Image (tube, rainbow, N blue to C red; front, side, top):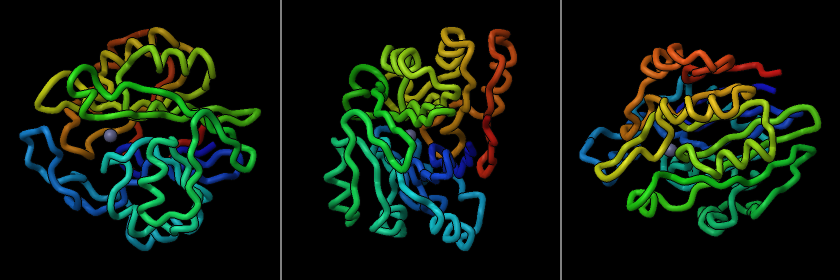
Length: 254
Ligand SMILES: [Zn+2]
C-alpha cells in the first residue's frame, strides 16, 4: 500500500493496485480565498502542491477513482471540479452525491454504508466536525475505511476525537488511521479537526494502530504545525508508530 500525501487532506492512496485520489484540493496557492467565520484574511490554500502542473496531469491520468469525504473547499475545490475527468468514478457519501453530479461528473457512486470497488472495500464512517454551534455550521462529515483481505486503512475525515471514531476503529480494526489534524479553529467555538491532545487520546485508546497525521500547514484555520505536533508527540510514551508526512511525501505501508 502506498500513501502519497499531496497536501492537506489530499492523498493518493494505492491499495491492491487501485489508485484512489482522496479529497482533491488541486488549486494554486491562494486560489479560493479566505475561509468564512474567521478573521484570518489569508487566501487559501496557503501553499502550492509540491509538484508541477505537468506532473499533476500525469498523476491524474493514472487514478482509478476519486473519493470525497465532504464538500469544504479544502477537500473538493473549484480546480478539482474543473480538471478532473468527468468520467472518473467519484465515490462519496450519498448526502453530497447530487452536488457532485451537478458539477458535471457522470459516474458518481453514492455510499450509505459500503461499496466494493475492483476488489477494495470502502466503508463509510461518521464523524463530528466540531461541537456545538460551529459543528452545525460545518455540517455533516464522513470518513472511509479502505480494506482488502490483507490491508486496511481508515481516513477519519475532518472530525474531532469522538465516539464515532472510536466505534470505527473498534469495528474495523484498521492497521493505519489517517487523522485530520491541525486543530482548525474558527471565530466561534472549539477546534473542528483534531488537536494534538485529541490525537494522544486516540493513540492511548488504540496503541496498536499506526497514525498518519495530515491536514497540516495548508489552510488558514489550522493552528497546530508539524513541528509543534512532533514535539508534543515525543513527550507521550504510549506512541509506537506515527508519521507526520511532508507535502509530497510517499509512505510505503505494509
Ligand atoms: Zn478540512
